[in-house]
Length: 121
Image (cartoon, rainbow, N blue to C red; front, side, top):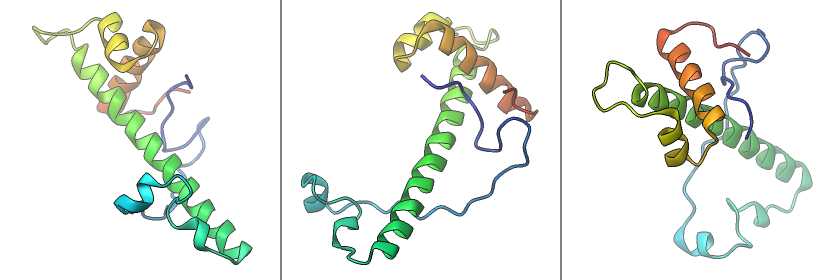
């Protein structure tokens, strides 16, 4: 699994603020047909296809980064020693289908996010 990192920049660089394409839901008929993907198959102009598919790729990356930040914050909350029902990294790892080492890193990453501090690389 990749190391946890924030969508707010890598290796100390300034935050990248991309405006990703909106991730619109797929109609039920298109979702059941693997040949259809966000209507990309209907775009005939290769320039437009490259542009739209790039927008989607950036949107998915941004969504992945943001979702991972929420995973990390949830893991940190579940592992909080002040909770009477706190979970161990092993239990968090099992629930999230991570390794225990990765769960420990995600707990620390989540703690950093919740403190509002800089996220370590």
